[in-house]
Image (cartoon, rainbow, N blue to C red; front, side, top):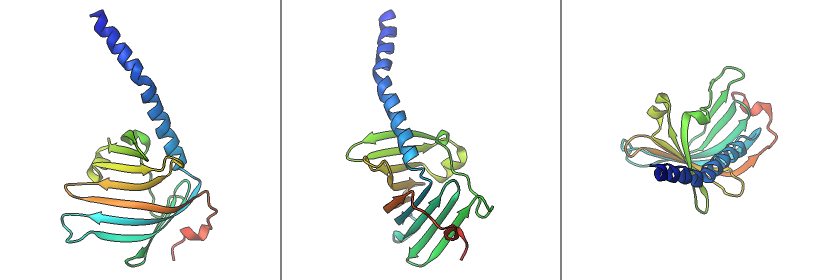
Length: 173
């Protein structure tokens, strides 16, 4: 009995550095992806069994911490969505790390798997896969999986964290 107990303790202690290393890595990834401002280009592909073909779109993203986002689609047509929590337009609150179970796989990039824990988030997503650049720790793509055969892939390029943004970017046109 004592041998099994000691074996359990030793096994747990052997994995403890990996657990702490993964938590530290997740914290660093989270911090790297919370810049005071960000400008980026994006390309999105959406697949659903209800659609004959995949839907593709692309555009630009601007983010001003803590709660301003401009998501501008430029192709296949122009559409602008602005979320501004300060002025009450499009009020939103981002989920926190407590709302997901997270794990990281390492290869030439980091793959962070997020599984929703909250019921409302589970209704939206089965899981979220983040592809993270190992050098900058910035998210390069997001794969959102929903129901059977439904997914959305968003790839980011031309990432400019910490860029100076004009306030009028977040105004309705």
